[in-house]
Amino acid sequence: MPDNFTKLRDRELAGLDIRGGVRIFGGNEKAYLRILTAYAKETKSCLKYMESVSQDNLSDYRIKVHGLKGTSAAISAMKVSEEAKKLEAAAETGDFAYITTNNQAFIDSTLTFIDSIENMLDEINNETSKPKKSKPNPGTLKQLLVSCKEYDVGGVDKAIEELEKYDYESGNELVAGLRENVNFMQFGEIIEKLSSD
Image (cartoon, rainbow, N blue to C red; front, side):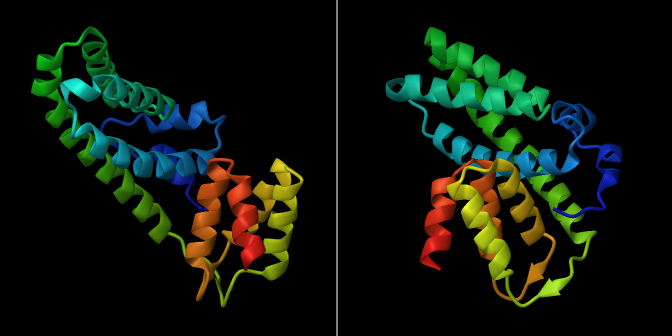
């Protein structure tokens, strides 16, 4: 993530309390932006699943909506969280009529919300230009691998932040994938990726 986005707190986004979200993450804007990126991606797959709700999968649907309620609250997207809570309650009581009436509108409005988050993230990324390199530094990749093997979270964070300082002619997708693995503490997957290279 870029370093010069201290303007994040000055941004406004309908349905998202950005200042509140940054506060939840202890004032760490980089961490908050990483979580917003992950949230946008995960929420899309959740909404795709919700499109096929039926009487038969109401229990699974409730679990998905419950998760969406929690993750939305965690980023200070309270409107989405509140609407998800209503759908979850309907699933718990078997009120399929409420779900049928409100599910698609919820999916559509949440997708619009996700689009606005992704647009903001694109703007932030475009406002900064990173120095160019041909490929990620092998030494830094090795440092990341060793830190993952030792479960050294501080070392992992330091290595991934170093890798993210640059824009690469070859290797941007690798670094983006590694960042996603770091966000979800998938150290085993990082070890597998870096050991096979």
